[in-house]
Image (cartoon, rainbow over all chains, first blue to last red; front, top):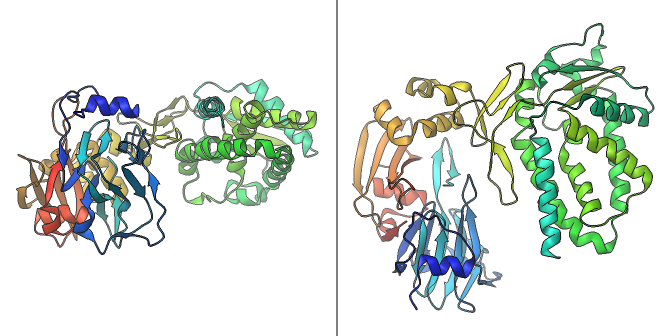
Length: 145
Length: 360
């Protein structure tokens, strides 16, 4: 079945803005991809410096998805969506840069959905999701779009 | 826990948020009667009431005909005798109300604590407490408990326990609780001294935006004051950050250059827009490169100030108007290569960031 923005939106009950093209199939990517202030990195690219804790707690991604991060104003969330029993997720991640939100492992295509940025697919594999930061004086500030 | 109960809790939270952010004129008779009732509960006769238009006026003026004791001067608010007595009265009431929460109510109590109480306390801190901090200036002590006693968050918590969770209060508890609830919905901040109580009217304008998961509000207005009182006293805010009025009314490159506070500078630049700011400020282009994963778009690195450069990037998806937003990200000043700088924002090397396949 072709997965489109419309079908994902229906599956999760999450609305997307109507100016986005809803009927074309969503590109599925096996490398690094960014969705606004989030980036999805294949785990192999940043391992071993980024990895799950040895005793990490994993949860299955439910049909309505896992909310990864909300935007600053208006609260538009980035949501990880997958079919039942194919994708698991943990926030117990060690990351020297402190930017990781979590790691997911998926055995079929999983999707990242955002009302303004649309959707994007990830091929089976393990990925780290990181936030973006900015430089401010002598410290860094996390970006929220 | 039923979804209905959760929905009811959210409705009660919105009701109290609306009261906290209300711009209606105070209900003076109701406020005076309820505060008089609270004075009686700590064993004092009702005070004389002195109404003012704003917290700034309340902190700057002394009611006519009143000679303040030195210990009741504004600078020494933490030593005033009455606020601790009211705070003790409130804490005693809360202890009593908590004791009415049975084990069957406990899941609901936890939900209300998170979705009503803590949400409202954050909303208050980012909205109506902001003008209060500005009015106090450098004398403001965030640890001061008196303003916390007046926060709607605890009132809303017990209101929700009573209405949504079915916790039963005694008649005495209801009587006192209603006094606090009436004050909270009838007027602005109040400052109790022996014999005289100063009460502020509410603002006539409040602009907020929702920013949190549980409906938390914060001050924001892009074209005027976020809060304004009838006497003209006002406060400006950009997405929750209190800023000088020029940031909203006249955000110029010259003023940004003179501004010492990095947060204020950032707000002013965001208001101008990063791309126009870079043009107007004439920032020097250090280098540019195609953005991997974002076909047709460039990453541009500019000199900004000492030890800081700015990376101008183009959004991966189009806005409602069909255009792509350009946005600036500040990066450490030692980067010469925009790909290096873009990688750093995600904790990646230039080689790793170059692997970017897609940006939306």
